[in-house]
Amino acid sequence: MNRIGIAFAALAAGGMLCAMPASAARGGEAEKLRRLDIMLMVTSLRCRTGRDNFQPEFQRFEAAHLAELNGAAKDLRLGLVSQYGAKGADRALDRISTSMANQYGQGHPWLGCAELKVATRILTNMRGRDALNEAADQLLAPDARGEFAMAGR
Image 1 (cartoon, rainbow, N blue to C red):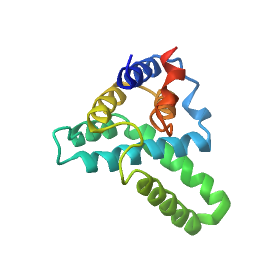
Image 2: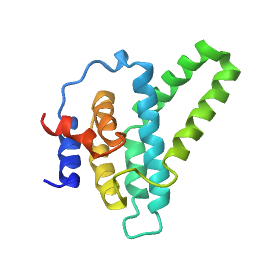
Image 3: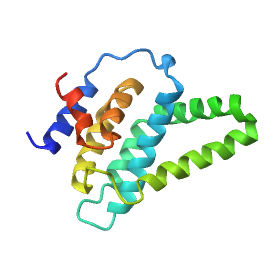
């Protein structure tokens, strides 16, 4: 199976996982969901002029997971408030978000626009914050080795 097939099998498997309660989300998971959202946003902007434009898929993803994404952003900010205070948390969140966006400014490290388009469609159909966290583990891995763990589930 090629890397694309493995990635999509991993995402599909992630959507079928039994999840822990969303209230058990940790700060690292909140940051991971924020990173997933930013990665998809930045890469969809990079891909918008090509034949594999996936901005419509990205917009559907955000609409389908608005509660999870907003909850993650809120959790991330609350964690920063405890460290930096309210004003400092807003600045820290801006720095973190900018850093995440810059990381994907040159594209995804191992997926192209076509693969990201299909992955975003699959993500849109997943339900629950924990399923998104599992998928984020795979899609945010620095290289294609990250998806093998879920492919076996």
